[in-house]
Image 1 (tube, rainbow, N blue to C red):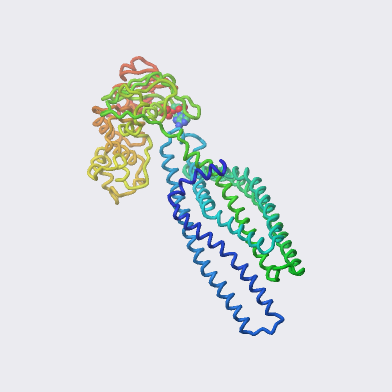
Image 2 (image 1 turned 45 degrees about the vertical axis):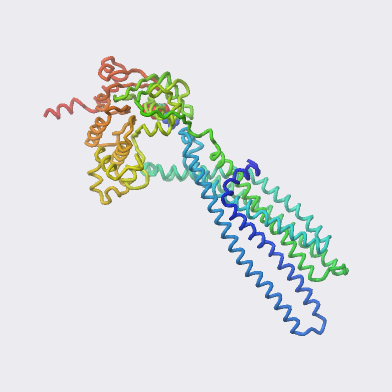
Length: 595
Ligand code: ADP
C-alpha cells in the first residue's frame, strides 16, 4: 500500500468528524504560528537593551522594556496553554472516535466472512486480534498525523524560513540548504527500517497467537507439567522481537545522531554568518539578529524532526494498514448468499455426487450421494474423521462443495438466502458455545425477542429447568459456571426456543450423563415430528432409533437404508454397531438387569 492509497482508505473514517478536524487544525496552526513570537520578542529585546547600554539610560525606560517583554511573553504563554489544551482535547476526541469507528467497521466486516476465512492458519484468532488492534491504533495515529499535525508543521517551518529570508537572504539560504540534507537523512532512515518493521508486524501477530494458545490449553499444559516447554516456545519469538527492536533502535540512534550533527552544523553556520554580517555593518543587521536567527533556524528544524516521527508512524501505518484494509475491503471473503426465501421449508435435502476439500487441502468428501427426508431422523454413522460433521457443515452452508450439488426442497442451496436458511436450521454441537452472560441471555440467543416465559418453557423442554432453579442466581446466574452437560442442555434449550423446521445434532449427548441423555432423547423424540432431523452420534441407542442411516467411511457413503436392514447386510455399519455393543458390555449389562 502506498501513501495515497492509505489516505484514500482512511478518508471515509475522518469525514464524519470534519468539523472536529477543522477546529483542531486551526488551533494547531495558531499555536504553531505563535511559536515565532519568542524569536521576534528576543530580537527586539536584545536590540533595545543593547541600545540603552553605553547611554545615560534611566531605569524608568529600562523597566518599561522589561514590563513590555514580560506582558507579551506571559500573555503569549497563557494563550498558548489554552490553545494547546483545546487542540489536544479536540485532536484526541477525533482520534478516539475514529479508532472506535475503525474497530467497529472491521468487526462488522469480519462477521460477514465465510467459515473458510477463519479456518485459515494466517487468520488464527490471536493473529486476527493483533492485526485489528495494531491496525486500529496505528491508523488512528495516522489520522491525527495527516489531518491535524502535518499542515501546521509545514506552515511553521515555512514561516520561520520566510522570516529568515526577510531578515537576510544569505542566512535564509544557509537554512534552506540544510533542510534538504535533513530530509534526505530522514528518508534514508525510514527506508532502512521499513523491512524490519514489516517483520515486526508478523512477529507481533505470532506472539499474540502464542499467548492465546497457552491460555486455551492451560489445563493440558499443567496436567503434563509442560510449562517449561511452552515457555521455551515463546522464548524463540521473544528473541526474534528483541533482535528486531535492537536492530531498529541501533539504526534509529545512528541516524538521529547524524541528524543532530547536521542541525548543529546548521546552527553554527547561522551564528557565524549572522555575526559576520553584524560585525561588517551589513544594513539591518543588529546584534539581536544573532539570537533571532538561531531561534528561527530552530523553528525550521523542530517541525522537520517532528516530521520524522510522522514518517515513522506513517510507515508503521502503511504496514499495518495492509493487513487491516485487506480485511476491511476483502469482499471476496464475504459469505455468499442467494435471494431465495420460500414461505416454508419442507426440509428435504439431496446431495448429488458431492466432493469437498477443506481450505487446507484435506479432501473430506468424495462423490457423496444422500437424500434426507423430512419428518424422519437420519443418522450419520462412521468412525471419527469419516466426514459426518463435514456433511452438516455443507448443509448449513458453512462451506460450498467443489463438485456436485446440494438441494433443499429441490432448490440449490446456493440460491437460498443464507441468513434465512440458518434461521430455519437448529444446530447443536458436541461442545456448544456459551457466551459470556447469564443463563437467560444464553438461552434467549435462540430467539432474541423471546419472553421470559418462553425461555422458561425451553429450559423445561431441555430438562435443565430444575437445575437452574436450584442455582443461587437462577436464570440470572452466569452460564459459564455451568457444567459441560448443563451447558449442553442450555444449547438444546436455545434450539427449542428457535424452533426451526430442520435440526442438526452433532453428537449432542456426548458430554451428558446417562439420565440427561435419556431426558434429551425424549425431548428430541418429541420435536422430531414434522421436522428434518440429522443426528451424528456414536451412541448406539440414538443410531438404532433413527429411521435412515448413512454409514460413511473415508469421506464416502458406504451403506444406507433402514438401520436393521443395513445391519443384516454386514459391512462397516455392522462392524461399528457390534464394536459399540461390545464396548458397552451389553451381555453383562443384560445379566445385571435380569438379576
Ligand atoms: P467426522 O465428523 O466424521 O468425525 P469430519 O467431517 O469432522 O469427520 O472430518 C472429515 C475430515 O476432514 C477429517 O480428515 C478431518 O481432519 C478433516 N477436517 C475437518 N474439519 C476440518 C477443517 N476445519 N479444516 C481442515 N480439515 C478438516
